[in-house]
Amino acid sequence: MGNPKEIDTILAEARRTWSQKTLADLLEVDVKTVSRWETGKVQPPAMVGLAIRQLMQKRKADTPAPIRNPAPAEGQSFRFIDLFAGIGGIRLGFERQGGACVFTSEWNTWSQKTYSANFGDDHEINGDITKIHERNVPDHDVLLAGFPCQPFSIAGVSKKNSLGRAHGFACETQGTLFFDVARIIAEKKPKAFLLENVKNLVSHDKGRTFDVILRTLRDELGYTVQAKVIDARRFVPQHRERIVIVGFREDVGFDFNAVDLPPAEDGPRLASILHPENGSEAPEAPFTEGATARVAAKYTLTDNLWRYLQDYAAKHKAAGNGFGFGLVGPGDVARTLSARYHKDGSEILVSRGKDKNPRRLTPRECARLMGFPDDWKIPVSDTQAYRQFGNAVAVPVFEAVARAMVPGILSLIEAEAGMPRVFTA
Image (cartoon, rainbow, N blue to C red):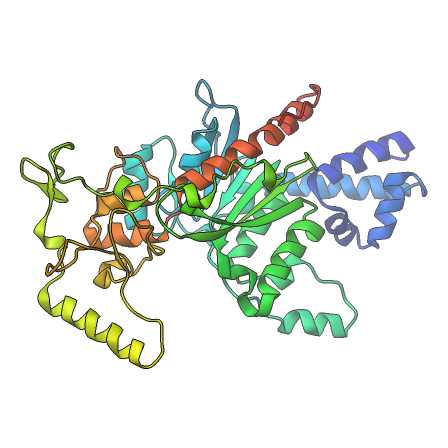
């Protein structure tokens, strides 16, 4: 392994497996030393080639058997994985743009039931992602994740900084679910990723959480990253602001300006998702009933609950607070549907006219409010359905982002296959 060309070859192979920093740590050298070897400024010693070879042999021996990748069906042009999948809203958006899902992780058993009912059994739904080794995740082109928002501990980082030691995401994000996203990206090096979270991620923990995430994705993992808060009101009759983070392994020119976002003022109104109750749609028990498919009586608020909500709102109004129920009609745009909707439905109450108690949305209306199709199966109780849709994403938002990402994804797939890179608008 003393031949310089052989050493350069094995070094290049190692760099396809590890980042400069990781390789430097494994070889117990400085990152700048690895950089000088790669640029040719310094010739690596003969022992470096032997050491790298041993490291790669050990890695191969330690690697668990990978999950087999299902073959994409006709019309599917890229592979993606679906982490913190919920009921599959992000997956649905990317499938509509030609993606094939090859791996799913979702820990909630009720969400798994809905996910399986709608996507079938093309592959197993894995549970807790923290229990799955990153090497046992199948290769993929795109990683999708709607990970929960958690604060990062600064204790370990501060200690290392005081000692003058470098730290990486493994230290800074350990113990959070974002760490599991990062470790999979570091291992599998997908061509792109899309992460979704609540708007407040930007200000969470005084901005520190978002800063750590961006630094990890850009500086530690080496991706070009952009983020944008998008209000789903552009596509569905609901104010629902979520931050979308998109990253590419190489700069392919992706820009959120390329995402087709209709003007918010031109967005649909609630009439587009409410049951018409005039016989123009077939009854769907237990949500609607009778020849006119009227909304089932159980969704109308009881006298006691309606009185409580009115008194609660009046109390807070008198105190100068903004708390209260959200009463809407067919021409309105609703507040954000939340996972607590099953408790009293107070954030979105549909008016039934003067002197009548309002009603909750039915689970089918919630599905429509989130942009799911009318053939979406709801195999769980109303309580679980409300929780699932309240935690879901607005599907049309992610279909629009996927559409803008696809040219960059395909260009990297073509480049990897040795084909010319072609960028399209």
